[in-house]
Length: 436
Image (cartoon, rainbow, N blue to C red):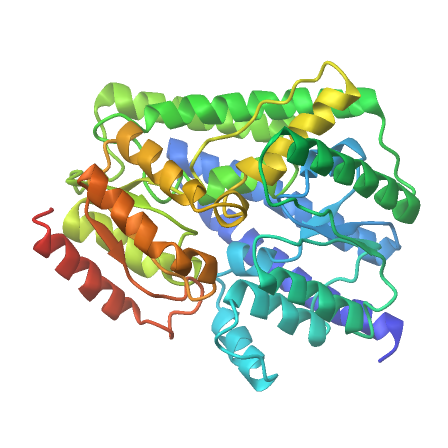
């Protein structure tokens, strides 16, 4: 396949995703509610991010493929478009073509025991359905699957000559580890500068980090609101959207700060009025969903939780806020705090890299801070690191006197454990524990 054909094939798929979110934006624009307006703002930020990548491909401009945990503020400061290699499973899991893509991974020979969030990008790369960037920032944590993904990139014909740099994450979380990772980020910047021509100016980085701090400060203030009983928002607003706006589209952008400012206002209005997450189902169970949201079947399950059981996701792994504010005094302090945020603070990386105390400590804090009635560890089939600590999580919840449920699902592929099976397990759990 010629280079031009490769480019057009990849663009066709990427444009399909863009058009899907454009469709969702059109629908959201008819929602005359504060939360509906939030959806509109978020989708516009997302769509611009996707369009920037499309423009780069069409005009042969540099862009990179990376991850949310590779200090995206640096890309913003360098005015460099980027996309997350694993973004489709997370962003477009509700799209009508996802099940067809999953079937495609099986036809390609990829094992169904491989994490779906890894399997789908491999499929897109191998079938030429992902834009080929100027450079790749790889990921060596939190699991073996991510390193396998880098190997696929290096052996694929279309990606073979794309330069790749993987910041090396140390195992520990002490000061020495943070300083080591800060140096890795500096090397990453030099690598990106070499292969894209975009330069990092420290004053520009300072401005971006200060804006990022404003974004995160509003997020922290909003999460304080979620302690209210009833909680002002549940699964629809708190986790996936806040995480995506702060870390996946354009980190350190005033539009992201504006989104969080409006989110905070929405939350304050609901708390002041005593309104819970669902106006039609009173809050009965305050739930901690300790993992990624079930992106592949979220619309079939989460509304049912609220309506059938009054179970509200007051907190989840991606809504959790343990973030470091960035000291912008000097280049050294900025890289230090970016390193801490991206090595230790960000979700999933935080829990799965390092010691089991990262799981148990977060559960203890969130259960106490948010008056949690029950903890669900969905047990995503790809999160084998979490499976190894499920007993520790269960024991932690037993010590707290809070019921714990371990299900066993694929958070992206509802064929693994059907939605009806999940509902039955959750209903049996709630009934057995006298909840709801």
